[in-house]
Image (cartoon, rainbow, N blue to C red; front, side, top):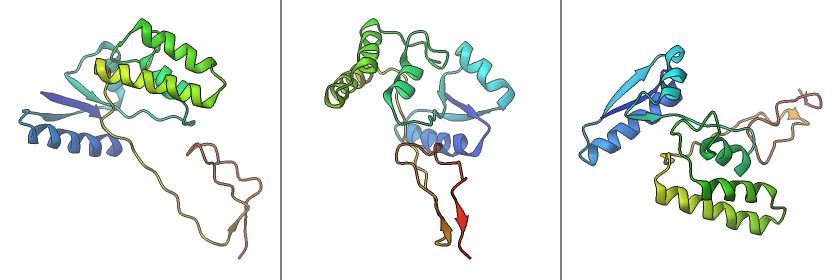
Length: 158
C-alpha cells in the first residue's frame, strides 16, 4: 500500500513514522511524496490508497475541527465521509451553550467516528514556544497557537 503525503517536512516526518508502524504490523507500506502543486487535486479526487494530511486550526474547538473534517458538505472532508446522525450531532454541539452538555455531544460524535473508522486521526501534533525573559508584555493565548501574533504591547527590556 502507498501512503501519500505532501512534500513538506512536517508531513513527511509523520508519514515516515506511520509507514514504519504499518510495516511493523506486516503491511507492505511505502511512502509516496506528492508535490504541493498536485496534492490538493489528488486529495479532492481521492486519488490515493492512504493519504496522510495534517489539519490545523487556529482555535481548539469542535466547530473548527469536526465540522471541517467530517461534515457531509465540507470541502475539507477529503474522505467524503457522510453520516446523517453525525451531521445532526455536529449541529447540536455547535448550538449547545452548556459546556458539559456540549462535551457529551462531542464525545458521542467521536465515538461514532471511531466506530465508522472515518478518516482516523493518526497523531496529534505538539508545538512549543520559547522566549527570552527580556521580552515584556507578551500574552500567550491559551486556546490557540495562532491568536497571539499581535505585538502592539510587546517590548524589549534590554
